[in-house]
Length: 365
Image (cartoon, rainbow, N blue to C red; front, side, top):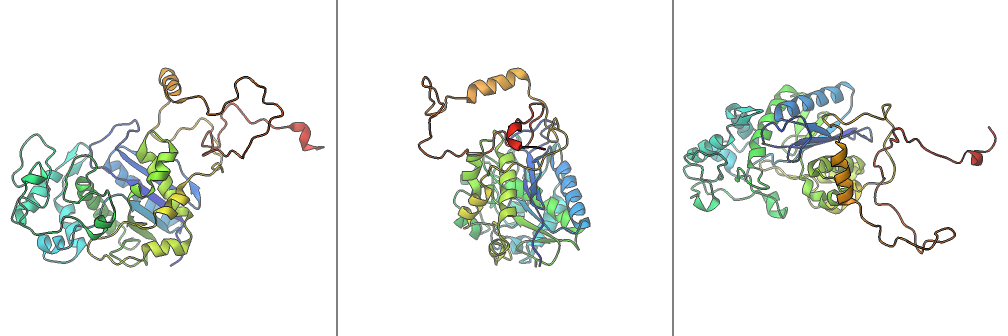
């Protein structure tokens, strides 16, 4: 297959609608098309996100571009769950069951009740646990220690036993948990899979023979780059940097990451290649292509009130280490080269300030 032209990364969420203003712990999407990064997109709920993803796939396929799109939730459950629930060792049988039974709206969903029904079918108070609702739900314990798992299923997938700090699919809520994202995300992907059945393939369950490849990602693989970015919305930084990293990888290296055999549980793309991903994600000082509207803001972003902006500046600006306070700097030479960690401002947009240059140095004409 020919290389990918576009790379998208979606940071998913099982939370309710988060409103019109960009927020943390919401759904964010990053996109790099033909080597050019777009501004990360804030998607206030799963309904909006699914529409955005559908439009992206339609556009990329229509333009003849190959698209790699990653989602930050597991695509499968630990080995044996598919057969225990559906009688087949087929992850898509689980996808179909979840999509058929999950009721999901911008204001809420029934994921906790669905997890409880799966527990009941498997004969015990497990493997799923955590109830985030005020009411008790039969067969779904609020705490892990309260369950008596009669299913005998593994606690984690093989990939989660390797990925230190990852969470089990069975935990349905709580800080860092992915159980809710798995159910709501799989239901969305199952609908997209049927809508784009001739254009879309799911890695690593299906062969890479279609123009759109959907992969499982884990943004924690580029933690070092995300911390260096200094973005107050972590999810926004993650999708921007990871989409850029994937777009910068040489084709053979990306293909090596895709060469995985995990037909039932799935796998995290790039696990074991963290150094390469971080190297590709780190920003350089090359600004993005200029836009034709210097006052344009990203979709869903509003102007920051003056008082809030001033408060941020007072809180974050500090004296530069090594500042020369008294002696004049003219004629002095740096002891060693100094390179900025990132472009400031991080976009090629001077707004009303303009750029200055030495006109006399340009010569005649």
